[in-house]
Structure formats: structure tokens, C-alpha cells
Length: 210
Image (tube, rainbow, N blue to C red):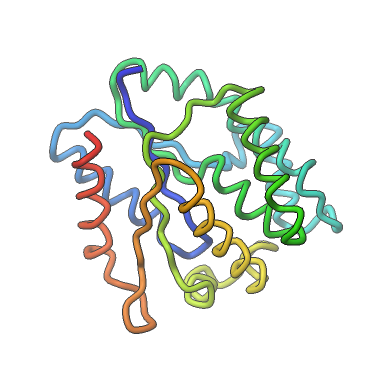
């Protein structure tokens, strides 16, 4: 594949969608061919609809392994589309990816169960489902309390500050343990940096990649 897969990830309220919109304009201005895909795709398929119901709290007791199958199924249905973009040399920007399941669903588990779960998710998505691996994962690191305020808590993840704190912890651990991660600190003096300032740092990372 001649293209590159870039994942923009982070907890809720980190500014992923905003940064992807700025990045898309930046790439268009530089005439770099790109595509954007966002996960979960809530209305596109039955997996996405199931995830939406889970996040609404419909299923009560959480089982991270079973819910991970829904997230993985949604991404598996996008595999051929992503590969076709990569095969034509495009830069593919993913809003959340496999790393999101590892962090958010891992946060539902006791700490001593997380390593096994994260390994299982990798085997499921990159092994069994053979998803393309990211060339770069950009983690937007934000204070969980600030992130929660940014989204004002709509789903069971966003409403739960402890969940966001644990997910943030796992994201940072993944950034150290896995290949091709870059962390962008979105905070300064306890507040969010400007979106333009964060964008400049992301754009510099993209320039190095392409």
C-alpha cells in the first residue's frame, strides 16, 4: 500500500473532530489526497447501532470483550474501503481506531486484567480481521476533567469522570508501549491550548510522515 493511515485518538472532549477538520483543510490546501473516516459509525451498520445502544446505557453490566466485538465488527466492515484508499496512495485519517477500544473498554476492567484484554483486541482486529495498522497514531492528551466539560457528558463514558481518567491513563501507556505513536499535549496552565496551536503541532507531524 502506498498510502498512509493516521489515527487521531484521545478521550472524549480532546478535540479530535475539530483537529481533523483543520487537518483536512490543511491537506486540501497542500493538494495532498486524503480521506477521513470516523468510528464508531453509529448509523451505518448493525454494529454501530449496537454500540450506540451500549453507550446509552441500555445493556447495564458491561462486558468489555463482548462490546469489543461490536466495535471490531464496525471497523471490519470498513476494511476494504480503507485499503482501497491506501492502495491509491491517499492519506487516510481515522477519527478513533483500534486504540480507542483498548483504552475505553480496557478502562472498564480491573488494572490486572487490562494487559490481557489489550493483547486480545490486537489479535482480534489486526490478526483475525486483518485491519491495516496505523503508520501514525496521534494522541490528543487532555485533562479528563476538562475533556468532560468540553462534551458535557452525553453517554456512559462521557458522564463518568473515573472512566475518562482510566482511559486517559491507558492511552498514555499505549503511547509508550506501541509503535508509531506521538502525544500532543493539549493543555497549558490547566486550560486547553488554542485549536490553532494544537493544529500546527499536528500538521508538523503529518509533514514528517508524508
